Amino acid sequence: MTQYYIGTKRIQAWPEQRAKEDGSGYADGYAIKYPDGYISWSPKDVFEKAYLPMGEDNDGSKITQQMVDDFIMPAPIVQTVGPKTTVVQATLRNGFVITESSTCVDPANYNEDLGKKICMERIKNKVWELLGFLLQSARTGLSVPAAVDVGLGQDETVVTRIAPSAEDTTISEAMDESTGQQAEPVPGAEAAAAE
Image (tube, rainbow, N blue to C red):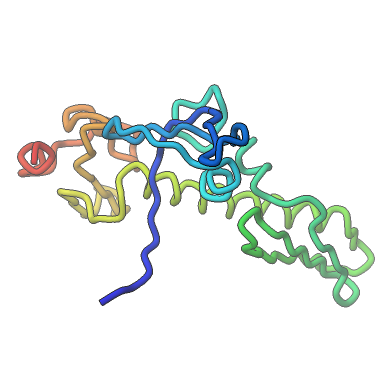
């Protein structure tokens, strides 16, 4: 049965021209190197529609403030609703729209510029989260990690330990995100990570 798929991947690429098939000159595009070493080429417009640049100084492991700022289109829609509420609607590069609102207690204290600033910070925080999700999916794929252990820490906070991929770190280097300390290995994770 035929169906649509959504895919994400992290690649390396560089601008490269290729001769046009009809011999009429060169086409702008990008050479693409995939994680398995395979290299292909994509026309510039197709490539730039599908891939988000991470920045030349980025090793591909993090989202940066510049990426977040660049993902939000300029000129968000800002409206005052009633005597004390600001609503901001920001469109992202891919057409997705995020809407936030800010309200003060006393209408005498209302300031649309301050409301816009608060809303834009909230929108940027959401974009950080969305781009982080995208990067994690590109790095590890969309499958469930090999070994996941979820439990309660001593202070009853949820502690999640995931056997990382070989690309990220070794089991002995895994960190417990809730404490920032080296995590205890997940039973059986060494074998699962080696598969």
